[in-house]
Amino acid sequence: MSKSEADWCKKIEIWWLLKGVKETNGYKRSTVSWGENGSHGSITVEVSIWGDEKYARFLYSQTDHSGEKKDFDYKVPIIETPCHFGGSRYWFQCSLYKADKYCGRRVGVLYKDGDWFGCRHCYELTYSSRNKDRRYKHYPTFRVLELHQQIDKLEEKAKRYTYKGKPTKKRQRLEKLYRQTMFYVRAFRASEKGIDFDVSRGRDF
Image (cartoon, rainbow, N blue to C red; front, side, top):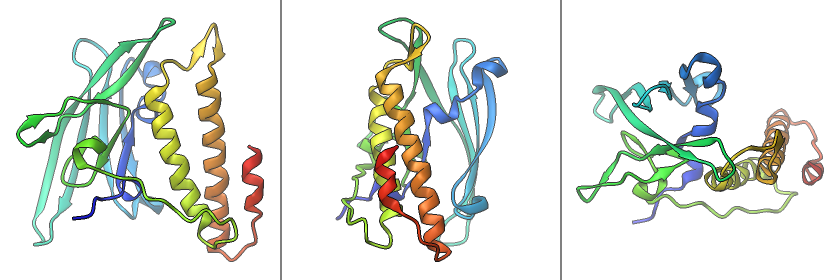
């Protein structure tokens, strides 16, 4: 049986989820959507990093193949770890069970390849290898997926984002990947409208 590809799964990234949470006293409620205007689904996520219990609470509904609607409301623990040069970083603690064994793995990204959000290890997700020919019509789409893969890996490795008030090298690399991602998103949208877009410029970011 072939493994699912992480590129096509719904996912939640801890860095995005916690964006601005410290300015809201450590609590935030967000709507996460996939597809244009939520065409591929949306969920509500409450996140709290205040107090002893740090968590992300997932609330959503889904309909199975038989047409039965099921509501989900559960918490995924958030772990805070100290950074080498001061400060701290937050992680999801995967709360899935595999072969009756609790995962508990510390990860920066959760994926949904079943009913629940969990780490890619529990779902045994793989990353697809894509055609990298820049002349290929769908190259921008594949490039965005590839960049997301690189961002996932770098987010998990980054210990902190600033040092002495300046961005770390890993943070600068992440910012570059974010810029490249937005460039190829624009390229994809242009191709959908039949507009010529020079994707070779993407390497300059």
